[in-house]
Image (cartoon, rainbow, N blue to C red):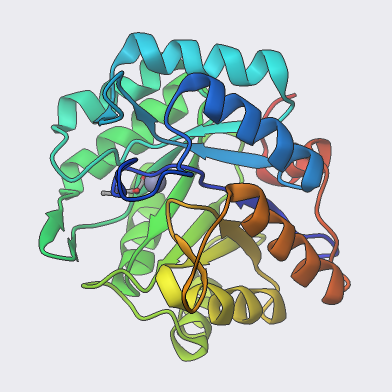
Length: 276
Ligand code: KMH
Ligand code: ZN
């Protein structure tokens, strides 16, 4: 693997605009963030949207409008979150696929999520995987704990490969309740991935202060990077993140130092099996 896939996750469902004023919550803010992050070297945008009061929403009309706006103004791969917020019902999370994104997230199991529970029943995971394949939407399998990789192996064995035939996972590390954001945990995941189909790729993101150790570990283990204000709102001790661009620029710098420069959006599509 010569280049680095850089995904930006600009918003998430957890931070509030009141607490984090730099968070992009309107369509205009999201689109301008996406354009600037693409110019810096991002090739995938992982999208959560907000309503007119800046609250997390899975409103289908807004999701469709968002996909259209991102396609009209960027060449980024548009990946919608099917995870939503911990309070979103399964039916709304499945309906996200009706907005016809290039990719969608597919979380591989239930995990404690701070004081909440991020519920992902097995039958629901299978339904997401199958609906995505039926619609030609490429999944990114979200891995919050080591056992989620075993669950992915089981899913692929029983239900077959995803749309495009390529398997890509994202290690979400450092969630309170999930695996820690450490080199040791990343290496354990890397080893477990040997049992997944040949050519499986991975990116990794570290929540909060684990963002830098996870970036370094992922690059050195041949992985890709996800960064953004969904995962990190502190740039350094006592310094709030100013923008998603600041985080993408840092990731690009790390990737260049590792002599694995950012993939272009065309290269990213080829890697992930996402149609042009
Ligand atoms: N907001 C979390 C509960 C995803 O986007 O698929 C779920 C999440 C994962 O962020
Ligand atoms: Zn997300």
